[in-house]
Amino acid sequence: MAILSANTFLDDLKNIILSTYFQLTIVISLLLIIYLIFTKTRHIYLVDFSCYLPPAHLRASTANFIEHFEICDVHGREAIDFQTKVAEKSGIGPETSFPLAMHQLPPDKSLNSARDETETILFTVVKDLLAKHSINPKDIDILVSNCSIFCPTPSITAMIVNKFGFRSNVKSVSLGGMGCSAGLVAVSLAKDLLRVHGNSLALVLSMEAVTPSGYAGNLGNKL
Image (cartoon, rainbow, N blue to C red; front, top):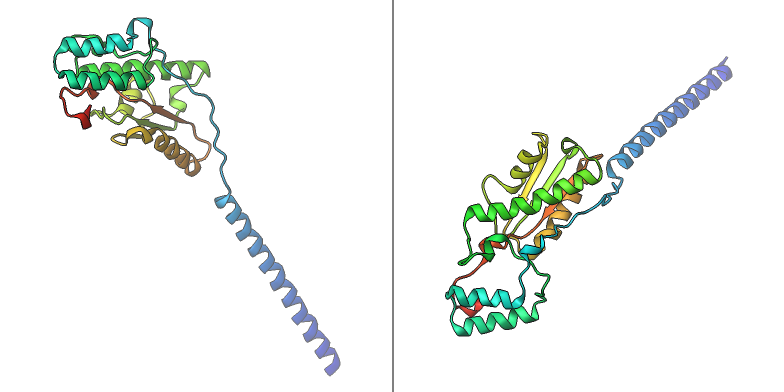
């Protein structure tokens, strides 16, 4: 009887060990699966992009650009000569365009003109991009815009949301005051948001408003 009891005890102990091992294996496997689900890298893809092409009547050659400076008579000769050199070396050619407000004499730098420029550019490219892929505006989950100089209230993203009827809960961010790096920052931000919010569609709008950026003075470090 003692031997039978010992064998029974060993069998029970063996079963307990096997059961515990099996349960521990299941727990570890579940934890590993959960870890992989929440830490796996989400792949972010560029679906398409669209650029704004201004109409021909907004083109301005370097000569026209400098002539406007001279006619407006807000810069001294030295400042005009300096800007002429900058314009000639900056890549401004006969295909370069300026917003309508900058063709006026004197240039119209008002808030309304800056808003008109922004709406003309962004409304055009957004409409083109959505139509090209038959995307319903309400399918956009994330909206990021960047414009360094023109930072209106309501924001640029609010202008887009209201114009195209995006969802009221769209995740929107308007970046401003970041200079030329803002385009990369906007793309990086959209990428990070897409990694957090999976199976989402993001729209990134990047531009710079020329209308309010003119400087009417002669200080070389501001020209």
